[in-house]
Image (cartoon, rainbow, N blue to C red):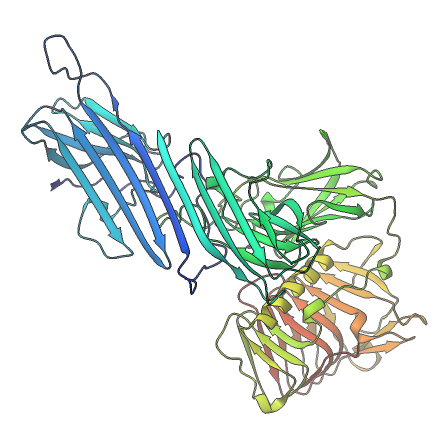
Length: 603
């Protein structure tokens, strides 16, 4: 086979293959399981169309035929991809060109020359296992992901046979794998099997080790699609996909969660067609407030969605984030901070009414890539009105025992940390264990659970807007009552003497909640302090920081810092609270503590 110079100016990453399939972004790395049943297979078999430009006898009968077969096999962590093209009844001993349409291109690119045998037949075989494969025209192409059409062209540059891979005649998709246990129910085990072709879809999920006679939710691509109950033996078997499920080749992640939808019991990801040249992974919505199918939602609550990465704020607006009652649009404003968008209705929603929220592909990330697909979720309001921010004590859940949590790095020296310390992902944290009066968790299930709870709490804070008050840029010298305070930029404490003190007065209510939200930074000057009065408690004070927080030397600080990026604590500080970096899901979250004391508040 002779190689022809390829046209390199091609948009290889723009196209998505087969059935309008959204190429699977691997949200969860799925390792091979002990029993070996970690299998994904996809086969697409397409007959080539005869264009009629060649006739093989005097009556004009056209005999030429062809077939294209694309196959992906994943067994454990081993991927094998193959392409097989069989041609028959072409002109014998004749040279043809093999050309393809790549991505969104409208002009064909010649891949190679081929010469038929004495019967007019030819077969092209190509395969690669992982990164190991023999040199071929596909060294720069991925046949499964980049090529949408294959043509066989004669010497007069006429197309004799054509295969459109986006419309295969026959196909088979098989998944057979165990589901990963997240640790929420340690005894839970499960298996997922999908066997589908163009005519039938067979779906089977079976789980055991669940809580007896308890409801669980099947979620696909992060969206709840069905609720079922485990039996008296703690077993649950699902034998069909619910009607509102995505097309089988659009399924990327399958989860079994508790009935709230927030705690994942079993999960498996990496479904669909993982492509080596599919371009950057696209942003998705990973969390919503309210959750999908929630009921009893307060009629004056805001609606929020958290993305898997930072988005272009200019694309997050009323056109890309909508709320509807039936077909009627709800008027409101849209704000964006960190990785979370918030829809604030112009007026209270109707009680006991179903609403549907949508984030469209008009939402784009910082690289100008659109959201993977429109994300849609629904909820039903109750009759209550939430009139007081103090009725919402934010739930830190599994993160409550941690003094420090980070997603990238933890460092410090000469410190006293009274509480647990957690880092994930990572191999080790950087504070001397002798300085930690608590448990160190690195890349274990406890820190994973804590970070999940932290993300939920961060999103709760971002969604808060009821009865909000303006948060000044400098809090020094002020006395503030319980409530919600919002600053669209940065805030902090600076000054000397009385102007170096922020007083938080609970006015006799020990359950009073203080929430401080800032879109950018939190900074305290040297020697500044937060003082509590009127029964205020550090556990009920929350600082939601859109970027990073920095505490100056000898700062005395109260409350929980939930920073989207980082937290830095300089020498001599005393913090009665928690330091959480990467709280909004950012993977670069780092905490640095120098010669300071951090103490988890009393419960």
